[in-house]
Length: 127
Image: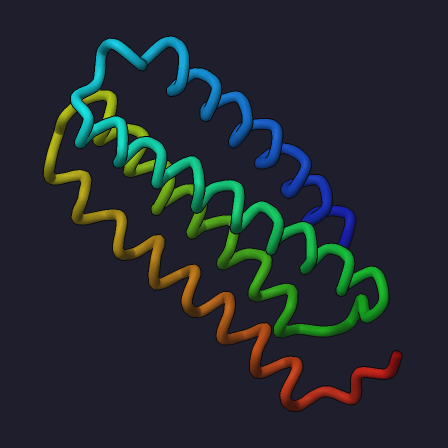
């Protein structure tokens, strides 16, 4: 299971950098400043939570049977797709109702961080 999250982190890191470069270069003159900012927010959250996903994968290498980090990894993955994905599509298409999907991704991020906090507070972590 840890290799799944390390693989997903690698894929998402690749995508975040590629999408960020696409936004900075190909979309620079095509987006309004507001939509460019929306796109950039998607890229930032994509990368931040990719790093969190990487951390989950490392944690699961040490504790492969831990359930809460595994749940957290799935939530980070879904959160990236919903939060960042909806912002990317909104920025490129201008379809405003897609912004209604973004908070669902944010809730996934919050739940993922909560799972990690709960795990850290209740487990017997040994250095």
